[in-house]
Amino acid sequence: PTPASQYPPQRGLPSPRHRLSAPLDFAHPATQDPPPPIMLATHFDADDYRLLAEHSPLMLWRADTQARCTYLNSAWLRFTGRWLAEQVGAGWATSLHPEDTSRALETFERSHEGRLPFEMAFRLRRHDGQYGRVLSRGAPAYDEGGRFAGYVGGCVVLEAPPLVASAEPAADG
Image 1 (cartoon, rainbow, N blue to C red):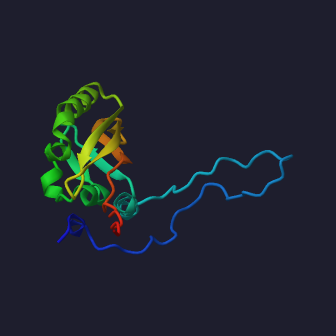
Image 2 (cartoon, rainbow, N blue to C red):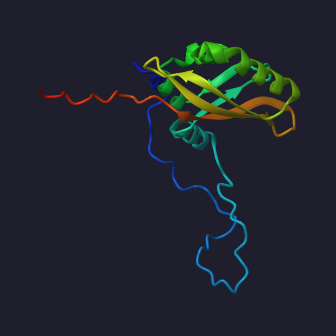
């Protein structure tokens, strides 16, 4: 089994139940006023968010109000080759390069205490044991009542070693 098997089976795209607040009008003469701003997805339910998070090519994460990681999407789990249960809480930090771990934890904890957005780069261990350089950004999240609800963020791979080493052609003679 793979870490992604901890998630429900993939389903097709959601039905078109999203309402637009303005019609999409991409063809308008330059002499006219531009169309009003487009407000997409005025109705987005939990299944839509799950679909967005789990099928995103970005590694997405969430932490609670105590700075404990509560969610990592399937992109993170595929990249690291780790199980979700191994990565929640402070377990995600075990996938960081040992030389980057304390700096990354300090950055996250300092930002969490001040409720500040952050950006940091670190090396993240890939499923094959190689390390790729990753950029992580996080921001404080607030519930509908304005109460601090933790952090949400994402990671992109800046550079990664090749998955398969290219073999040099054998020299004849």
